[in-house]
Amino acid sequence: MSEIITMLQHFKQRPQMYFCGPNDSISTAIYLDGYLSGLSQCLNRKLHSEIRLWYMRKNNIENSSLVWTGIVQNFNQEKSDEELRVLYVDAVIDFLTDNHIFKPDNNINKR
Image (tube, rainbow, N blue to C red; front, side):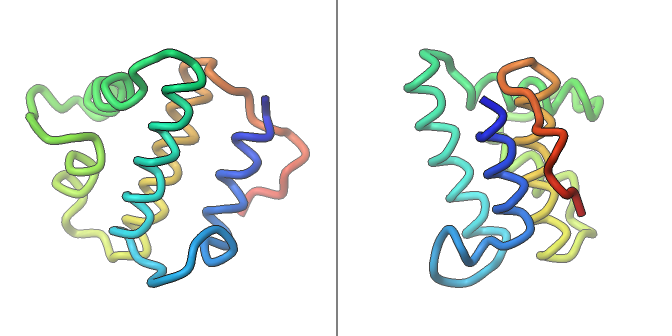
């Protein structure tokens, strides 16, 4: 199912192709949260909890009661809105590939 990763890579490069409205980190976080909800239902997994714990381990964050998008935002406050938007998408891609949920498509032109 590398199509999932390919779609996320395209979304990162051209988010306006996937939803209308502002191209900002809040819209991206909401979109990705819904995306993970759909994948969770299809895979019968709790991906929101899994990505939250994965992100905390990966970034040596000991304790946080925030949801995963809140953790990303809280620990990257110095980043611009565009950088934060990219961090959200990269986090989902890395989470899915690191945990072997989906494999990346090696043919995609990464930017």
